[in-house]
Image (cartoon, rainbow, N blue to C red):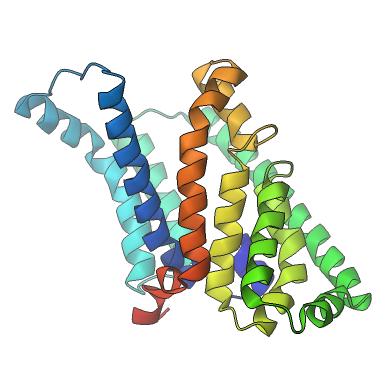
Length: 268
């Protein structure tokens, strides 16, 4: 979303660009986890009975309606991303209060306050990033980068852009990276013929890799707090996944069709 705002690109098309890449990444992770489990002889969980599967599906039915509303609404062109978000919030409110009955008005107010703080933080980042972009343009930094890149290999430029984003992802949160770096590299990428959606996927995926890469990848510390495991144990398990993501990133860079496959076949 932040890339779409920064680069003035359709949010719906950005979502669709990431769908193919997300599915491929999930498949790669699943295959590796399956092979690793066999190699380490990890015991299988007891297979659920049909009755247990049916009960689980019944319990999850209303929760599964949320992604259906968002994805079908956006991808079918029925709703804009903003409209889908508003309808999804209303849907969750109804389900939590009247079906699951798992939230009180007091808890709802606390959640709303927390969401308000998060949205305010993002808007502050956007405002700061817009000011920084204005200063970059006033100093003609993007134009200077384009001039420096003139005559250089487009492949080399793309690799340097993604390396810079990858390193930044290890140290900075992704929201700040997208807001600060997009105005800088967008003109450079356009000058070598990169599609805006293709550039968006490279930025987002490079940031995603950086966020699980030691020493300061943000998601490492999120996982540490969530699973209550030591930093070193989490890091040791990450390297195969980082390698898989780097390999996929190379495909994202050199095969633009991965990012453009679905958007080119749909209209939003």
